[in-house]
Length: 185
Image 1 (spheres, rainbow, N blue to C red):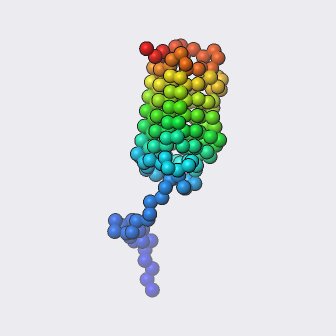
Image 2: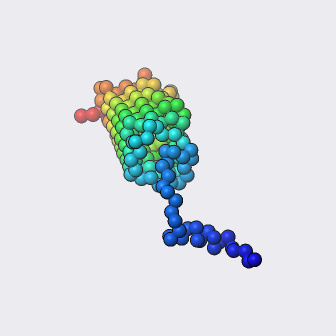
Image 3: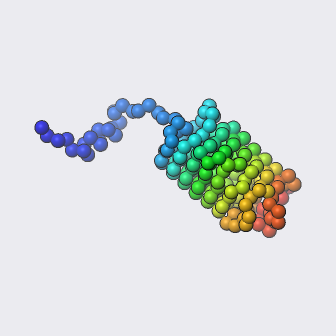
């Protein structure tokens, strides 16, 4: 009996005529690596858990969802809709892009933020941003946001052209104008 080369088996498994597996919902899997779910709507799920590594979730709808024990590492969440979401215990964002994301009214109570780009994101009315390291808030909308609990010292944070108003709460001693932020007109 002749052995079939492993390379041939790999080609057949990836052939376009091979039967495709049923799609898997990323919210049901404990670990996802380099998956593409841009623009998907996952609002029917009760919560988000699991590990997401280098996954594309840009434009995804997570509006009003609860995140617990969810880790996002090097993920693209640009333009994602997370309006009203709750980032509970064990929620981590490391080296993620959230440019232009809708984070209006998000409760960051359990989130650990490290090296995240919030450039142009809508953070109006968000609260409990506490554990933040190396983040970019350039041109972010911070009107009405409660940032008063952010850990000190606030280093490696970029605030250029971020917009704030009289309702925005900053940590004691933080000067948003000196940091580069601008008062809303």
